[in-house]
Image (tube, rainbow, N blue to C red; front, side, top):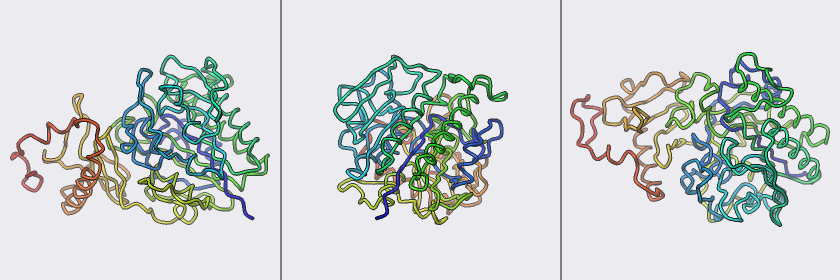
Length: 433
């Protein structure tokens, strides 16, 4: 009987689209990621579930737009919110066939005794509750029985410790299907150059050193899978939770982490490798999102989707293995609880952006933001050339806003702007009634 595949997700923190070679980066050497891309498929139009970390991680693990989980902002040390226990994670969806571990950064709540990933279906957690720039910080270990360890973090060696614990888990589970999320807490600032990587990046400084360390970790895991003889049994995914923060490269895309609906904060690296199942050295422009991993893993494992749960993600197996078209009609891009962008395969519509320290509604001002994504940038709106497309994209936006409005927990920063009288000093076709 053919075994079910292993799933490994290497999940970086704040890694930019342009930071690595397979996405076009040239300033930082990433030979192992280059190899990963040569041996698999690179998705050029993959979006994180959110443009900041907490909601993005919730979306990836649940297959749902983060607003459904109640986590639409970054959790800090004093926050008391946890991801609801009613949410079904990838680890829970794959049970009982799979053993699961989350190693690295959690950042989906740390309040009370039952906060760890092991209370959300994982069998092992070794890592930190939130980003490594938040204090106080401890490294914890939990199994299904409860907490088994607690240590002060060795910041320069933190990612190496995560990698070593991941290797141990893989060795322990080599004979049965497993799901591993290796959630590295870098290259999130501040950067701690690991021993052996200090000064290696002559162009990108300590940030570049950290990316080179990530690249080396990818190489270690590839070697481990090969040595254990489970290379061809394992689908490995490499991606990031959102775009870069104060450092890092967006690859020339507009905005950064937390930056509304523009691609610099949302569109991130995605490489998938599965020898014998995923064609080598392929690139696909099919749109996809982190919410797609849960339904994809369930489909590949032959496990039904969780019952009684609204899943927004789609199974992208055909995209990965056969170069198929995206199963999505559109992807929704949120700023907190507000939908600020809609992406289809061909077009992108942005309804709000930041200006003078506030989220500003762009609709009704006379300059609707429609982008032709075949151009690969968001520098010039083509709304005046395609008014019917603008109308269609606005219809998609309104339908999505109506669908998710009941899930909002508070007023939108755009409500007061929507309540203003219609502007008449704009071209008639762009006036809102």
